[in-house]
Image (cartoon, rainbow, N blue to C red):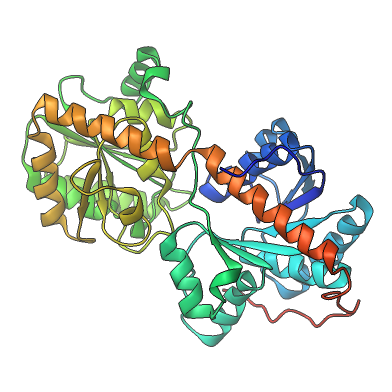
Length: 404
């Protein structure tokens, strides 16, 4: 694993907002690593509930309207970031989303500071304007991809040379996602809050309430399962999608799932939620760049049933740490749920242990941040060896952006 012992530089990460999510969690983890390596960590965003965590990680948060996609706001943000880069002596800017990436790219052109990006998802293309909007993420001196699937997407859709792409899988805090570290009291508190029955095995689908996360597929599979020993639990914020939550509740009723499933809101103690579960389901109907819940569950020793598209085929060892099923297929999902529930105790225990070992060996946060710090170090070193090579004029062209 690359060393993170020395990075005496100032690194600025930019992201639209600091809400709950994998990209936001990565900002915090990397900021902590930059500080531990002797550097200065800055994070710019519109704000959000995770700002406090950024500050506790040792970073300074700078509030800017970076969530906006309006061209004039993007342009103004570029000027703000340029001023920040110059005043704070920033050595590298790392963009984690498209709208702030346009501003950061412009600011880096004006200052000559290296620009790094992370593709946290295989962004939809749709039309030439959307492709152009996405393409700023391919402009980094290094383009970090959160999975091999995303790396191939970047090569195929944006013709980025492979030597500029670094695949760095997401990492999680293995000490936090550890069954032994979660008390029974925490698990019981959640079960009581959600009204989960004590005498049934919990089938958990975590993830925000949005259609492509596959909650409808899960409900249809539960209806086909027809087992008295299982109870479905959907956990995730609707983020204002109240109509979709109501649709899910109506679908559950129409499928005869009353008393067999509950839909809970956002959970701040996901390790306890995983501990409550016997099995964890990932049912996304569109490819995810990675699928963080898949490794979190396995780290907790919970076998996973995941849709076989996007990132999860890289993180689930089919038949050993969980199962892969065809996406958007309630029949296949129901069949695999039944197969998993019928595992004898010894078989379940062996799979649970294999899941924890698999994630511990490959997806710890230390590996992720060490690889990211190494990217920073190498890019800054290249820049200092050729300081004038990529300096741009102070009046670079306006970004071609719009509402997307």
